[in-house]
Length: 324
Image: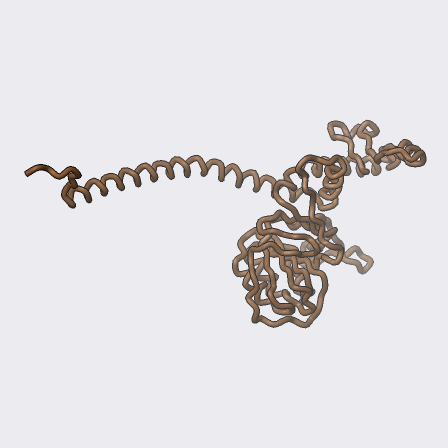
């Protein structure tokens, strides 16, 4: 018999060919995925290392230095620089201790002899530094969304909460104690908290709020987590970098803080040298271009306050510091 023009192999043979082709294709895909994952892993590791280094460096600068650096970059119109988000002045720390109580050898607190308790600056400059985990309440005066957000927090996270202008407390002593147990980086509530005496006992992390009230809210509305929120007048996205201290809270993208960290570190270094100079007997005015700046502004000319490193030997190697 003549072979048909379009010969079809037996069904079992076709299945075997298809299986062989699929196996070869899957093998190639697996090889590509393996190569891709090998390439991605060093990049991911490098990115994680860079972030950890940034957060470590941020723990050594204060919000004032970051704001001064931000002002300088904005004044020079640095390309691609967005700027810091500064939370409103009503956002205040509720357990910030600029001075820790000094322990005596007997286990109590030392006295100065005049009825006052001795202090030492062990906690001076204690800061909140970490990445934002956001919570959006879906009903005012209901803090179940805050409890839900807390449940997903890990070490180093900073919980950032929009409370929809709540007037009832949405966090308190028990909440902050749990945050401390989880080794979180901090808590920011755009609304009231309570239990200030208990909050003051928690030294491992800072809690910020816009007000205080003894009356707590309800626990019914689940809210949302890990979405962009507005807190303290600033739009915060999940993963944004947050820095807080006794002066307030600033926030921004990682790229923003990477642009800020070096000039902020320089500002901290320069101001330490200037303080040393004042203690050595140099006047503040002698270490800046005060007269030149005054005369320029009287004439209506553009000028800036500059702290001159040449006025003090201890400023050697540190860049000058300008204030617009």
